[in-house]
Amino acid sequence: MTGSPTRSKRAARKAGLREILLRRDFAELAAWSMQAPNPTAVLIPLLFADDDLLRWRTIEALGRLIGRQAADNPELVRDQLRRLFWSMNDESGNLIWHAPEAIGEILANAPELAAEYTRQLLSFLVEEPFERGTYWAVARLSGIAPEAFVEGTEKVLPGLSDPDPAIRGYALLAVIAFNLSIDDTLLDELRDDTAPLPWYDFSSGELTRLTVAKIAGQIDK
Image (cartoon, rainbow, N blue to C red; front, side, top):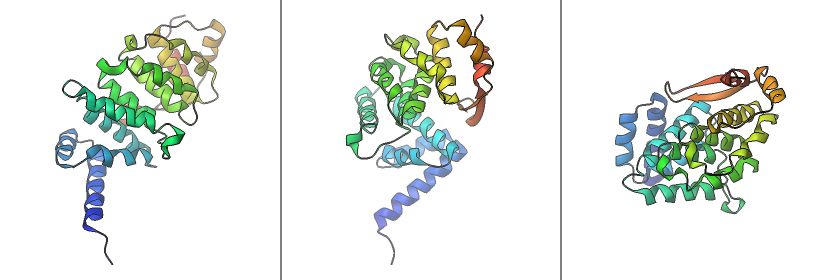
């Protein structure tokens, strides 16, 4: 017994998209998005991918396909952001753990809209299971549009002492971008913190590793 034609077409679109993302072919991604009836609906499920590289390529693709429409269709971008924020609510019935990263990357491609959402984004710094992704999103945006964070930047400071080295590193990147002060004793600890953290390099499209100490080395004492 074979599946329905609709299901087969959907599976084929998803398989084709995975190949495009793994090749990181932006021209083909744009062409694919023009042909797919609802490209976002095909991309979003890939945020659940076990393959870390595929998941980050998906985040990057969402930023490009959605965020870059802000100039011509800001309401479309706002609608997608609302949907992603809703997916971080227990009432949604389908939590998307990596929604914060997608939100951060969409806004990184639409910095003119970022100020509308930074307060809401900061509120998820202390919401399980979104802390790590939210710290990453804040770090990403702080390096692109720090002026969008009109208040609440000090909320990233507790992340400097978090047990998760990724949160420590992402918090430190945000602290540097926001030009916040760090206690000398804590800064010394961070300079000696060789714990690795994952980092997606948008210039190469590859997953790399940083250390908290390397990030802390950017700060002149």
